[in-house]
Length: 369
Image (cartoon, rainbow, N blue to C red):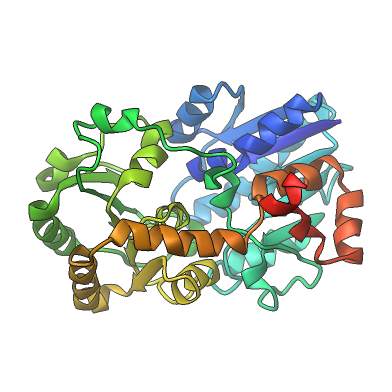
């Protein structure tokens, strides 16, 4: 069968790359399309995944809306040229083309409807199937959403598929066991980021001052880093960033995805933006598993207090690995589930409709049997 995977963000490269290779191993044709983002295309190239470049969307919301029709036509053309049967992704484009063609669309979305109202209104209803983490059960407008017990980050950071490379430590000028910290700063330019605030320049500097006596600091940003923070800029290649994150003592930032990545790796994570308290999967990681903590920018003092508490906590890494194991015991191997669902679509959707607990068969214990 011929499949298409549409990449709209660098994080999607990680989310779908195992799916790409699994489908290829089964003998299927897989075409990858990607927005013209250097961070995404570089990641695809580093994993040896060929791709078709699509136009990049402008930052402004109005520009995104006006160009959406053009993207739909470009992707529809790619689907017709490659005789695509099923398109997979997290974009409006694949959902829309499934309404005007025979191509079926499978959309994976882990954000709450109220956080991304445009997606809830103009994307998810048009997908042939919508799949989400089960923490969103009962919170979706779309009643036939398919739920699974996992987080997107477990598609690539589950221990079945990821082992951190210790060589990244020497590459970063670190010795094994040396404490260090990773900070991630966002720019909030997505359609659902309008009015969202993260860490201020003063707050970023405050965090650096607190952390400096405790170990090395590495900062990663979406765009150019502030001049006063350039000496801390992380220099490892993007495909090695998760290995470095796995060895970090603490992660701090205003990024949702990287906070969740740290959490599923068993690294304490602190996040600070106005999304705090509104993202269901992060709320579960915080309230149920104690892996991450969210704060509004106005509550920065509370974040600082929590950071200092963690810095003084004995056996911090061992405790977070224990919490991680508790989380993993409740979750499935998402990569294996995704591959089964996509390859067997639409029979897989019917199987889950008949038995909503079917996804539990993809827990590591069940897969091993």
